Image (tube, rainbow, N blue to C red; front, side, top):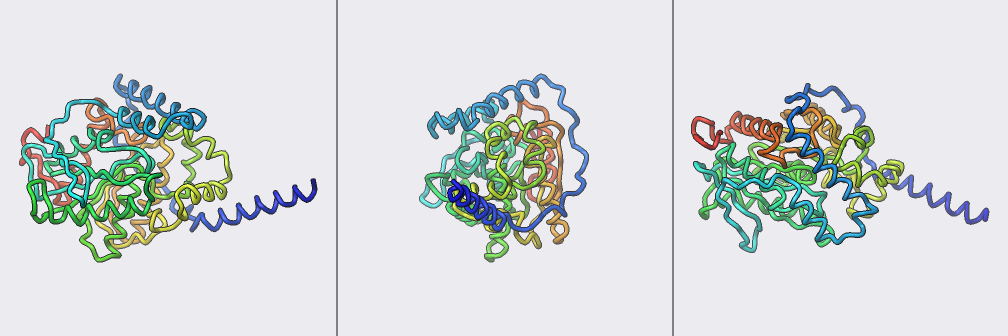
Length: 366
């Protein structure tokens, strides 16, 4: 018994030490103030309806329940989560052996102004369908040609595969429009949650690899740090209706042990700057807008990224929203705060010279 206990103690200690090594730099110095919310406490019936739908989705994602359902079922549930409104943009499917996805073309549209959108879903779920309300809304609000990327997902692929798909799509979009070969005048990279991770990470890869960097970027509720060590990961677990329920068993582990689980799941160190952009060099990056809810678990990822990037000399605008679910623009246009979020994204992109001004968009700006 004593020998068994000693072996277990040594094993736990080894795992903790390994987890500490995997946790990367201490980012607590970036736990600073954040701006007041753009939108106040939601009062609409739509917000209550969204909360109930997300609560049901989050509870269904609890480990004890989710493990009994197939990955295909879980992905189908994600596809049905967001708003199911009619799509106003023209949709053009693409699968040319280089990229897979779809164009969303508003009317009017400047096809030389392009936005590459990378959906979220924990790297294993999410699709063109699940995020079509966001991509359609962005097209309508900006007058840009929006390309929604169908990138490779876990567990069939690796995290590096997903990153390679985004980088390939960025290069493709710089010289390819919805009507064929055509140079992009402006290029924007945007994504949410896991797609926000890919978005922020690919900005660094483009800069370091000598690629054309996007002219601007947008990250919605980004998972900027895969170590999941920020205070809001635990602090907002009860108020995050989407991420809280499925992650609570994981959160009971010590944070160093969580890093070990992440290493085994993602097959890479969670603090590797190649996959955790918050741990990378944030200098010389394009202007970036980050939107996040004050009640979601990834709040401090956004706050830390904002302060670290500004300290490095990059321009990052941080906007907070009160009491919104994780990636609330999924519920555009039924949720008023989702409409506000996309309108502010459009205004940011106009200010960067990327989107069409509202005076040139006619009905698109409505």
